[in-house]
Length: 181
Image: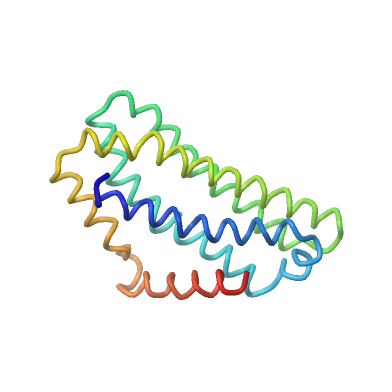
């Protein structure tokens, strides 16, 4: 295993921890009803909206996916599927946000719960596909220089539209979410 791709796996593990906290919350009806409009729930959704979609996925889409697809024709279908899954995941997350805003009755709470479960399942499946179908291929087909470039890209968490302290903020938010669950 190459260290270059451990940054991606680390990011997946962090995202998975927040997904687990969200899933656990959805499994407890009383707690979900209580937390649906809380700061903690809003923090989870914020983390899941911004970190994967503004930081993590763009790095994959701009650097990892094209490099792998260029070197391995068999990976092109997986890359196309992963691009599609990024968009589907965002749409599922928006369903959670809409359902949370409307969660007042038991029926609306059930809709929120269903939206959470659909999103969490989708994201786990998506990360598993990346780790099964892309990362091993990348480790096999990319030259050391390409792997080093990807390592540098994933090591630098800041996106040009964010300040250089974005990772510190996400780390603090992540610790807050995990501590509260």
